[in-house]
Length: 157
Image (cartoon, rainbow, N blue to C red):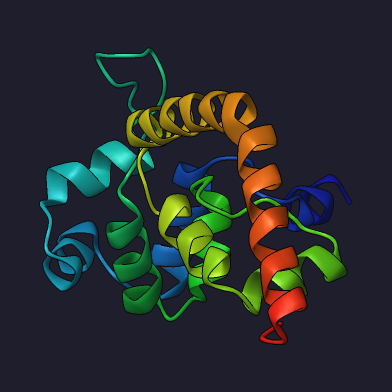
């Protein structure tokens, strides 16, 4: 009974997922490495959950590599991304629909592919932009209101 429970437990790390998926596909580490364009040593490090010298956390494969691994192992990108902590945050249905219908959805997809350090840079930029907009927003809204009023009174609105 304990064995069955263990087999059905969700994997908690990318290394667990990778070992299981690779073995299920009947591939050796070297074969998988050749298929995805990396070294056997790197696949081994991912499977052993080797801690990176910087940050003290397990090595994080790039999103591109995660997608290649998923394809090589016959697994979905979503499954591989979730195992590697590259999954996008869950959004409620209304928000997800609005995002997918706008160019912001494309930007969000691009943002999700960034490494953490790059996301931090984008976040700092957005914080700065928000600060500047909040300082200038009242002026901009007043100006936009004047333009709209002019259009309405001239019959072009």
